[in-house]
Image 1 (cartoon, rainbow, N blue to C red):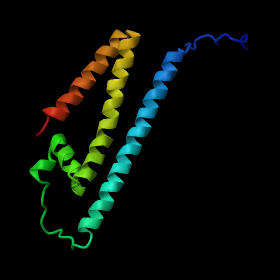
Image 2 (tube, rainbow, N blue to C red; image 1 turned 180 degrees about the vertical axis):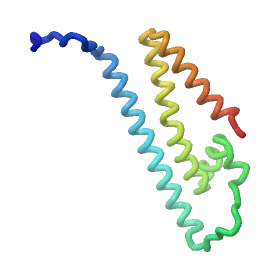
Image 3 (cartoon, rainbow, N blue to C red; image 1 turned 45 degrees about the vertical axis):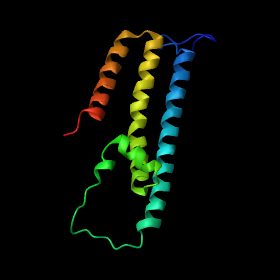
Length: 137
């Protein structure tokens, strides 16, 4: 048993700042997933309203238009009210949420001046950016 206000031996003292950072990161993930879900549901409802009466054709696969193959194209098409683009925008938000978490974590490590984790997280951010921007196979 330890005295009041003292940590047991071998346990790390948690910094209040660490807890705040974890709370912000948790909220980012929650709000990101919620926003993505709302956008996908809105897009899905619009998609059903526009194309729900058409029969499905599963014999031939038709890929997406070239305009819907890039983030910029998806945003432009979603602004114009294209329901397919709105659904894709929701999926982009869902994919971007954990990437934003990594970037936010990098900021936290920079503030804490934790060089090892800064380096590791910088490499992860660089790989995510590479995959998003140049990694089209």
